[in-house]
Amino acid sequence: MTVRAALFDLDGTLVDSLGDITDAVNHMLAGFSRPSLAAPSVRKLVGKGARNLVRRALGAESQDDITRALDLFVAYNSSHIADKSALYPGVREALHQLAESGIRMAVISNKHEALCRLVMETLGIARQFEIICGGDTFAEMKPSPLPLLRVVERLGVAPHEAVMIGDSINDVQAGHQAGVTTIGCVWGYGGAEELTEADHRAASLMDVATILLKETKVVQK
Image (cartoon, rainbow, N blue to C red; front, side, top):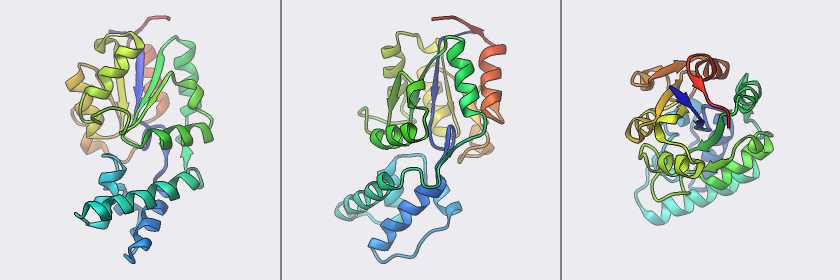
């Protein structure tokens, strides 16, 4: 196998952002005089974009309520983007190894693109990635293969030369539909049960680097 590009999910893969997401959800709920949610409950709601997150947390179907909830969530999260968020262990080292080996890197998240960029810049990893895209970058988000196909096209690599690395079934399904090899990250929010169909499973970011660098043929830029 030839690997030329690594496509990373963000939340639950590179960044543990559950604390800040939970705070933003609870700020939104307070705006509707609703009781707060504990982090484990919020964890079950993440992964399909902010609009879906606030809709499920609020239990609302009114588009006006969902839009207001989304505005409250995004405004709070933007102002508190990394109060509690942190990189998972080994992220900097793994990204450095991949960059040194000539593997090109992109982030494909279902989080708003602006929030992706903000948290990555705050935590000091944005410059490692040629492309950063979120759930609002393209017409569709994961599990649609569209974001992956657009990103590999921009990078000038074929789908079979790319690997999708993420913690949820959305990443695995998107990868399979795009013809991209997948690595499931068992430390993330999705849990190992969502990753049974991944081509590989990794217990840490350094495991990801090992899979890419030692179990595959790496082509320099």
